[in-house]
View 1 (cartoon, helix red, strand yellow):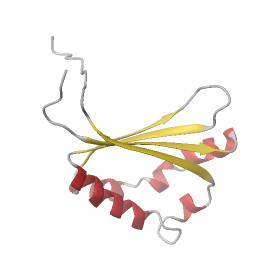
View 2 (cartoon, one colour; view 1 turned 180 degrees about the vertical axis):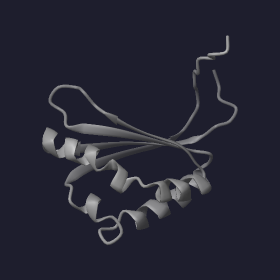
View 3 (cartoon, one colour; view 1 turned 120 degrees about the horizontal axis):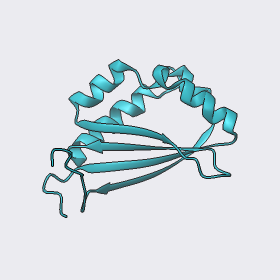
Length: 117
């Protein structure tokens, strides 16, 4: 099915060196992803943000999916995040060492279950 309200997505993988490091990061999410930050992102077009812990054996990884109402919104939010996540503005995040892999794209097909049926 084609999505008539095409959204711009960013899918991000974060790899940590150990399970303990990943778990410590997850315990710090409220310090990193604050209500103030989410409010700014929402005002600039962020529709949805999901953080998932990958449970494949041998990986210490989380995934994040960001959904925006447009590529323009993505660019605005990217600028906000670049400022928010500097060591001066987010010292909690600066404590962690991880590798990031980004994938950006436009929704071309989507299935959503209609719970009202």
